[in-house]
Length: 236
Image (cartoon, rainbow, N blue to C red; front, side):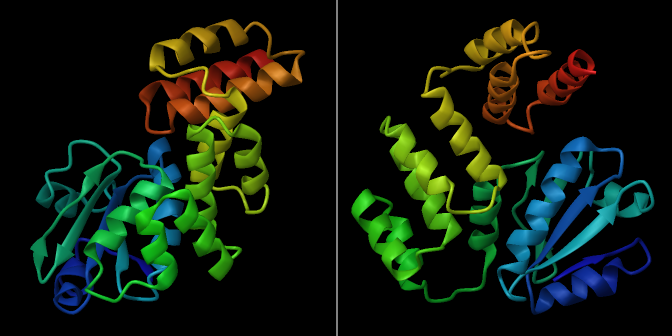
């Protein structure tokens, strides 16, 4: 469940609700690029909890009292309210896998499913067993694809990812697999991006590689938005 809250309704919407249900508070603004990346991920992951956790969205431009209460110096900023008290949180955009782990960490105690237990083990045998139980489970497929990519089994990773819709996690893993692990540091990524800028105009392969490297750099990196603008200017 996701809803908007305001300075006037925060007491009821968030503090009182948190006495029975953990509330995630997402501080955002319409002009904030990373906020528009993180927001849909938060909404998706919270929806997967079937109401065990709820998401309260706060437009900081319209609700300065809430922003001041959380001492927000940058956004996106994510906080939790549990039993009326501020709990763990994080700053900046995060990939879907990290957001899911964060949400899972604040869920009320529950028994893990067989698939979740196998995913926690995380080796190839366990992940394959999890896929036998739930062949379309996107989390398991991403975990197994990441394992394959890390083991230089790049084609296997890409074939797995073809089975599921694109997500922030699947794009990142696919980008790593297509690059075959050649770019292990931010410096190497930035060097290659600089080279590709002169090639993207008339070269589809160069444009695809440029976009892959932006996925590896990550949406939370402050350089990513500027590089996307540079790509657009070169193309148009």
